[in-house]
Length: 357
Image 1 (spheres, one colour):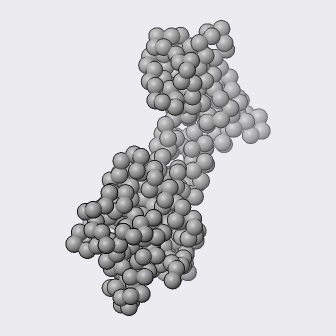
Image 2 (cartoon, rainbow, N blue to C red):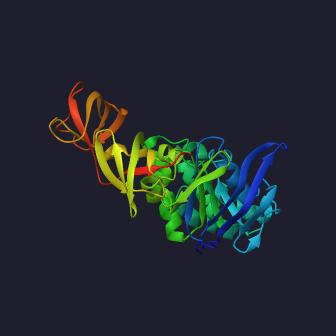
Image 3 (cartoon, rainbow, N blue to C red):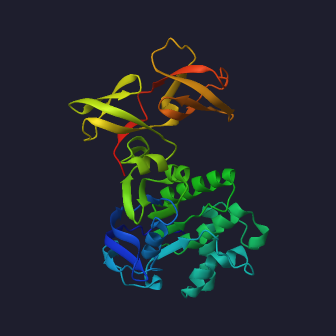
């Protein structure tokens, strides 16, 4: 016996969710999660991402619009009638049941013959690297192992859609990285459709085929991790996805797809992104500021305020006429001391014109 994927797409068509008649949690949201893809709903607390996930699961019902799984309209179907499984933040394991019984619980409830359910549970534990753990109690496992048991319990139901609600938030940083890689490997190997909710930008960039950034109950931007990091749609997305320095500049002229932009004492050419001449916001990734201690080098003058060693890179705070800039540099040998005067130029990547929110 092996666990099979029945991956189906998820479609939201103009979906709105209102609580108490006046609190709009999700406002006219539309998107498609293609079958076999992992899409992350990312955003700050209260943005609507968890409510959106719960409407896919059938734990919340839309006030307007349609929710489809595959070609089936499930908008009004309860959770029990939707072919989805959810992995919760709290794991939700039964402490008095051993691991095998926890994983097979959903199969037992569905009426599957017990020996078949046990066999399926063992297959699920193999998938998450816990072969031989079926007799242990949850209390005998680490946090990462408990999370993998929760994933196995969801997988054995062979859902059309697998949902993850902040699945790694209870784990320490090193374990989060390990478990997110395991989840991504399982999703890819089985061709699962997965919708993943997190507020952790690094986690979203690492696991996703596509990311839907939500803010104030609407979609701020949707795209691949690279799209969102390198071409944020507005100030909110630029600031929320990774670290971005938001500085002021001026578009002096337009030519084809490019704009000539004045940034402090420098002039650079950047894609204009349909922005007009005049004042403009520029998002600059920390690694896209290049520091030089040669003050004769062309660039923006600045002074290093702080220097922090982080093992594989340095982080600097640099005061300039653009404000205090956050700079990341890979050189951990030739470090720059605080109070050193520097010149700053821009790399040919990670520098983007952005509109207002």
